[in-house]
Image (cartoon, rainbow, N blue to C red; front, side, top):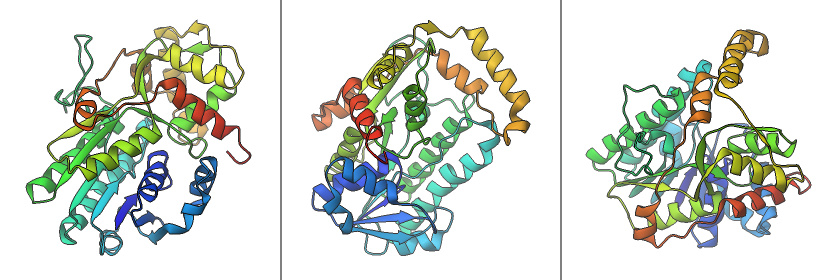
Length: 334
C-alpha cells in the first residue's frame, strides 16, 4: 500500500494515476470536507475514469499526527506531495505551519508506523542560487541567511525535517521539481498562471525559469521509489526557458498573440509597492510582492543531469506540457 498526501494537487493527482497504472494499491489523504472532484476531472481527461474506484480515500490532516499515523497503518511507502504554495508575506506563518511542521509530522508518523520509504516532494526554491550563470544542481546548497521568499524558506526547512528523519532511521528521497505544468484545479499553483494567459496578456517578465510536465514528475517520483534512490535529492527539470517563451507558448495555445512587451524592473517594483498599499483593501492579499518581482527578474536554470543519468529519464518539452494543460482547460469542467 502506498499513501499519497496532497492527492488533489497537480502533482498528487498525477501520482495517484501513475501508481494505479502500475497496479499499486493506493490510499490518499484528504482533509475533512475536501473537494476531491478534481481527481475525477483529471482522470477523465486521460480516459482513466475506471481507475477512480481503486483509490482509498482516508480523512486526515498534516497538523494532526494521530490521523497521519492512522492513515499510514499498513503503508509501505509515503509520497508526501501536500504543500502550501504562496508568495504572499501574509502567509508566512501558514507556510511554516503546513510545509515545515506538516512535514515534521509526516516524518514522525512514518517513523512510528515503520514506513519503509518516504518520497518528499520539495521544490527548486530550496536549491541554492548560482551567480555564475551555469545551471544549478542538487549540490548547490541553500543559504538560510539569503533573501528568500517565505515559501522557499519553508520548503528548505521541510527538507531539514526529512534529513532529521533519515538520521533517525527513515529511508527517504527528496525530489525538487521546478514549475509543474499539468491539469489541476483552476487558480491553484501553476494553474493560476495558465488561467491568466488563457485570458491573453501583452506583457511578460524579463527573467527565466524552468517547467516540467506533471506526468514526468509523477513518473520520476515512482521510479525513484521503486529503485530506492535514497542517497540524496533529485532535480526534476523538463525545460529551461525564458518567461517570454513560456508566456508565448501558453498564450498561443489559447489562441492569443504571444506577449510582446517586456515588463521593466521599475514597473514590477512599482506594482509591488502599490499592491502592498492596497493589500488591506484586497482582503489582506498582496498580489505582487518583492519576492515575486525578484523571481520575475532572475535568470535561473537547473540541471536534470542526475535523474537523467540514474533513471534514464527523458522529460517532455515545455510545448508538450503546455499542450496537455491547454487541452484539459478546454474540456467541459476543465
